[in-house]
Length: 450
Ligand code: HAM
Image (cartoon, rainbow, N blue to C red):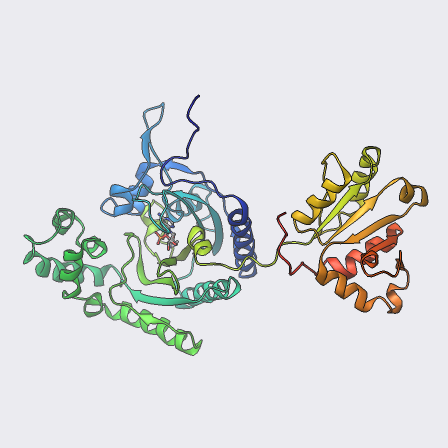
């Protein structure tokens, strides 16, 4: 027998509740982004490798160690995108939008990094990103942070908000000199990667995962001591506005982010349960210029959706389900027609196809349907539909209100407690029942999974 196929290491299917959560998170984040004036952006999964080398930086872990890179059939080096910012900047230039500012874009989808898989770290993972081009006002940083705060509140995820500045080019030139001078004393103790970076890109030594490197860096110079007057002033304005907004934040002088393109503000939101970074971003004022466009300041961030799911993001209640079942085989087409008619926006209807009526009814119960609309020969003759409540909380609600005038049309089949869950409706009454009891409802009971 042949071996079953597996997914590639670090990549996985997203199925069941995780898939539902994934879509719910995307919907919620998209709604929030749209309410802040962002528009959707789609870019290819594959870009020329040089885009990321130039954008993120050759000496970063992401480009130096983690890209899925290969040569295509025309001999071009291409890479699966490890992040979305470089592609968004390219798209701004490719589509001649640099004179049409501001542009506020959101995007979501898979990103690829060949890192060691572990909890919250995958080789194919999903981001929801936001990029705001065309403003160097510190208030655009604040607006983005407001949006992120709103997102975490909506997803009901408690987070710690860390912020720092990586200054401007002048600040970093001074900082680099001080850093190299300090780290050169430890050349024999630093990891091999860091020794190489000491000469090519010393700032990236600060991202090193080696414990020894981290210990050495923690006692070294800080960017705060190298800030230019302009960089200091910008960060002061950000800090003051955050205080005025009454946002809790932690100033973390060791926060540098692992990508070369940042200027001034950098931030991360860390999940209080997992300790994982759930969202990271910052300002990048040079990248459009580096890619051959004019100087256009920008600020952005990306959420890691896989991590939001791990952190227990609230996906909200599942949509209410109504089962629509035929009693006999020859009732099935009429059942499907009824299902289409009842398919009012926001209600999910299912038409089970099992071979017997009892199995069809059982299936409705299993998937958590609140009630089943039943159509048999008798009902069809009377041009009515029978409705059977399957969920206790819905039964309680209907029965406690059933003396009210607007339910006068409900005809109880019998007064015995068990049968009272069944009602005979005409189609208009069925619709008003859905509007009144089902549309805003979802069953508090778990599906029985029988
Ligand atoms: P990043 O910090 O590299 O930033 O990634 C953003 C988020 O993606 C992380 O905070 C994390 O939640 C998630 N993430 C990253 N790598 C993995 C992984 N291997 N597995 C699971 N989740 C992961 C960026 O990508 C920047 N482009 C953000 C940005 C946009 N800055 C400005 N604009």
